[in-house]
Length: 502
Image 1 (spheres, helix red, strand yellow):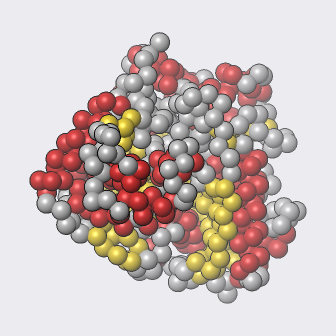
Image 2 (cartoon, helix red, strand yellow):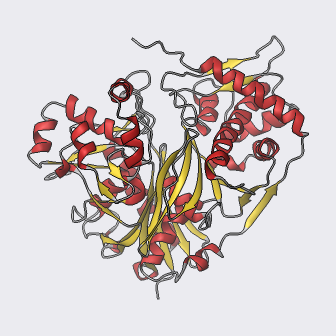
Image 3 (cartoon, helix red, strand yellow):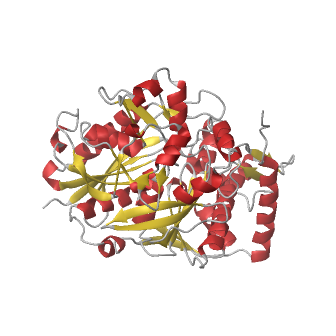
């Protein structure tokens, strides 16, 4: 019997492949970073072929170094950066334009038009989303309107649209499966989360020919198999591709948040807080959005979500653009060297502010700088900013959910930071629980794939595999934390609306 599952974890800055055994332990991991493309301020793109090649190389390398045979692999699952939009030729598989990344703000003016025309309520009612450039629908419209011949070719049925999991499944199955899972579809602003179908009215509104769109499917079923002839993956031909979820929903599943009221936060490029709200979509009144968490065994689960566009990317900014640190770990070491941020507050609104502010025109700012400010204070301010952002999301979630959240489960690259998680617990006044196996996003995809083929028999079996590494509890006085949070809100007000509308 096959004893392993492969998860493809296609992220914003790198593509990874991880092989898990039946106990949920990592057997092999490979990761390949790729370049970000910034054609204009506020625009972010990726090369879709680079996404594909780095993902295939990671898969090939993880399998090769594992020492396993194809007979040892039960299934492949996929998790992905969400909202990122790709359009390609049905006949050749060649992209017609770069992938427009979830962070990209180029469609903000179109979003303003939709709001001005009174579509906010209808879109929220059907999709659970706010009108924002974050989501895929307006990105797809931009490609059709701005790539020569794209709209005409789309209307003739020559082009296909997909988010990243759709693109990868299509390529892995040799074009046999043009599908999207419900969790990713629910992030497009074109999908009715109540009927689990593409919405004809919204497609007409945005001028999207429905023949472009992939078939919506559940998160745990066989979509197809790996085709022969993919270089480096010859041995894996015939392995079922049978689990998919957007990275944040996958992390919620991988963290074992399978019951209503359980919440997690992923500290990645952005910060994403999700709360399982059960089998009924909960309408947010506090600036959050509602998405499909997953559909499994005929039962659909929904999540409240708050998204911060820039979190871990602020640490990368310190390293790559400012040169204040040499490695991400150095940010932690610097932050630990000072007792606090010395009155400095940094708002990393590099591409606008997400939940609960939803300000496309905000930009980053640093306030409270004095002659005594050092790079250690800046490093500390960056980590504290990430914790403040998550606190904004959790406070909104508490309002919407109508029930108390007693613990926050955490994962993502920046969750290795003890200083940040201590501060997070101080601000929230609840325990913050970091798992021993931090690859929870990839594990969520592996679990969904494994459940589809009977590798694991139940969600109870999957949930039992999670083990805590460390639980952080509040240490600082609440009054001190409340005052810091008050000043954070003041700093945010400085960042809001910085870009003047034309």
